[in-house]
Image 1: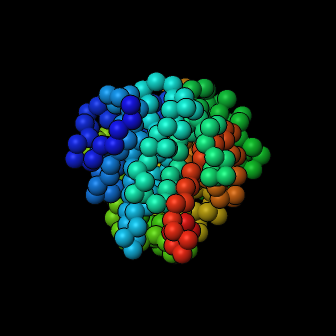
Image 2: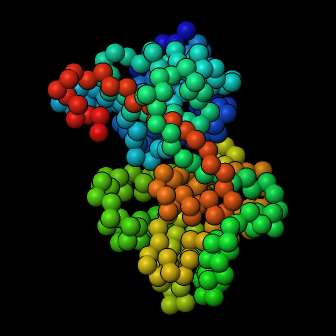
Image 3: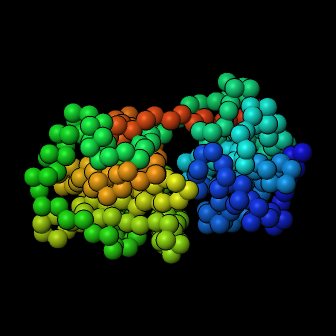
Length: 305
């Protein structure tokens, strides 16, 4: 039986045990991770936490809607056992009627065959299995990536592993961040908190690249949990882009972690150029679905965009 559980009544120990056993192996659904992103969230729970569905909601003009918080790529239903299309359908049907608009990104392990296809939009993720020799990984690089790596190796890049969140966030804000008006100071504060918490839990680490003048030019924050390394945040300046610093950084990581029983998750992307960059490392495309259900009154269509 699927039941609604208020945030204060969620058994976080059982909840996290379910998340950790889910086939997707995603950390986004862990209770303590969600608590960092949003002050309060509720849930749908199947039987004794055999399967769970976090309900992340907010209100606008008094209308409750379900959304994806900053810091999350995929949520949806997490299950200890193989999730059937029927159970996923039942979970979606059990979303409280008080939630008038649903905008949730189901995880790649959610079988969406029985859902309304008109309410689904496919999204791309890219993953690379590192359980192979570095030579095999390198042989999977396309010509562009090989060329970029040769360009990078012409420069005196130095990798550091002891920088903190502030350096990489400042680098992002000074470069790509200027082009993304939707990112707020609250978003940056959330990402900073995620980094500090993950590093404290020994589940996150930062690699940065400096040029020959000891100036930071690129960096990435990785989360390592549940059998995967996730590229959660990265930044590059103009010099770093020209010198292919990120290609160099990722290649160095793959050298270090080759043959490990772990998957590298590029965390995206739907952006064509970025997807092509990630695919150039031989990454496999994984599809996950954005589910949108609009039960808003006719005049209130503002929420769906």
